[in-house]
Image (cartoon, rainbow, N blue to C red):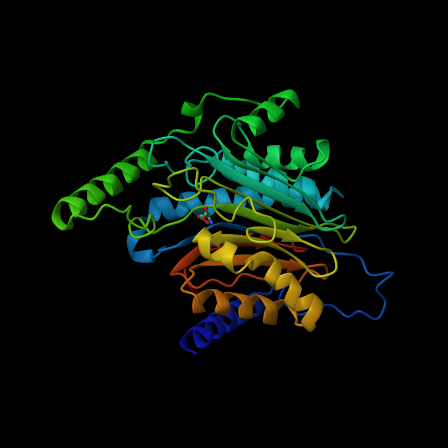
Length: 355
Ligand code: ASP
């Protein structure tokens, strides 16, 4: 009940904040009376991960860096949409900008596994055809989201993993890099700190199990985008390094269609970020679409109910959701979520904290 209130309060804050700014499209639908003649306003919504993102822990310089990078990603994707490009192209280009930035847990700057390697996961879905592609546990593909897109376009499969996925990407002519390309000192140190803590807890308490990867450095950083193009087509994509200190070939929700990513022109496009195990168990991205499809819920009702249900099993994180009328909502139950949107006014909006 408390969580419902929290989500509702946050959503209200978000909506009132968006309606107060004249340059921001709200979640209110446009009139549907003359749909055939209505020009569709392209819209792009992104996230750069959810977690303990507090103003107190953020230096002004870092805040500026996040702001600028998120705006750069929004502008790049919107340029494509505004020129008549597809939602798919916009999603890929937007995510690639975040994959190339060390600020996010995707591409360069991805988190480390327990074995001090980097294993990326990514997925993509096209709302017009409901075709989809994904890669999991890949370490050498320069742009995992591009590889996911390629799995959708150039194979009969939906998901490929590890070495096989890398071989496929190479065959398709995608850029293959040495794993050191993704290295950042910050992420490496983050892993070493967690492992050290694990070791000392083990010594003190004789614990042998791995600590919850999320107990420390509780910040995510996965990236995602959902877009609506001028033809009314939705697309969604998500790319991540997963969770710090992950072991045993752990795969999160990000490459799983229905959990981390989903798109259907009849309902909505969704990209998730958060504690992946819970998103898988609640099939979060599809759950939002299903509430709209089978229950007739609005995008807002569906997304809030799904995040509420996630909280009920102690799952933490958030989602970005967009429907084919250009309504969007970005609910989360963590302290913050890097997020932003751009629509017909062409002005990028970025938020990080709760309100
Ligand atoms: N959902 C991702 C995972 O569990 C992590 C994240 O969103 O940052 O792998």
